[in-house]
Image 1 (cartoon, rainbow, N blue to C red):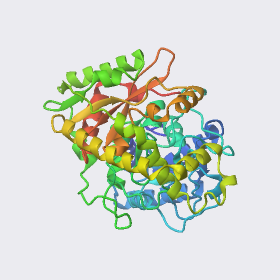
Image 2 (image 1 turned 45 degrees about the vertical axis):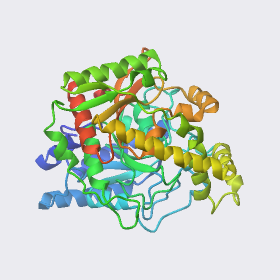
Image 3 (image 1 turned 60 degrees about the vertical axis):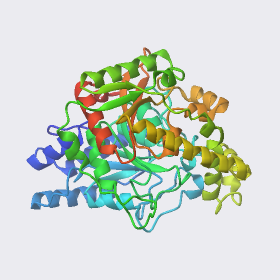
Image 4 (image 1 turned 90 degrees about the vertical axis):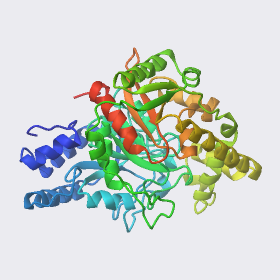
Length: 465
């Protein structure tokens, strides 16, 4: 493809388009061909929108030739998790019950990506209702690093497709870890934005007061380009924030060192929950940040145990409310895992939900105090390198909230995080870390992770050619 391939960066693609080295139509056709070859084995896409993608690529090519430049995503092939409404394209949210649902309008973020000139390759597989398991009629995607490994959920197709070079960036959603789990499990970079930073209009909810949507890509720079296109207030979603949207791409470009940046770490909190290999990889990431000029500050991370005691009650009560139009009236069309969660949500006591809300607010306050002394907090994502499906199911069955020890607390607090790869276990399982910041600090987090990625090559590792 004349200087770019299926793993090229968004910036390299843009340079190739504008120099004439390749074109949106050539690139889109090549990626569609790769999807045809690899998707049957990976099961990352539920719907491939080939005709639409080629039409959008032709339009982008004509605009660029005429001098109209919509920015870094112009002509770049991307994909959406199948919970974002797309006009005229099925949007199932991973649910058999919604397989035939075809929206008559776009989700706000889908419309914004179209305005940015992005090319939509299709809709990506996901767990049923964005929870922890896929519907039995829709077999789970395959992790391109190793078939027995978990893809991460709920943005499972987003993780597999982006890691395998079946798109250049994708949309994920995150209620308790669903951008961070697949990013860490597939060697990707992902942004869970501040709650309200990206509109959720036209997004199928799981638990609205915890839900966020954001980019998954192969680098912080690529995530910055995607986030710049979708962030911002939306009158159709009055929980979205009116805060100005910074130029994420421009803000990370000039940052190579991290002098003056304070990164907090609680090694006791991390060490109590992870394997030695994950701890060592996280320590290496901290050292790299220090070598870049950041000050690593030992902190006392606030104890989330009181909040965790009732957090699942609050999440599942919201889940039950979301599904009232179809559950329990059509319970037979739901998979067993989602049915179990809905039943727990329907039976959660008002007292437990209230306690969850109260403890959530207390935790938010304690976390704000942490950020009064540091710019970001370094945190693990998973207790081990990417687990197998069997290992995940055993852990979740034993202690679901414990499994989300490093992730769900930041949904509860509404905090932004950037997840990035930081190594592999001895048997080849990807490992990732999170950098977490105060509300609306995505630009600073992306700049720090981008600097880290200029000094390391973990984000350049690929599962296959």
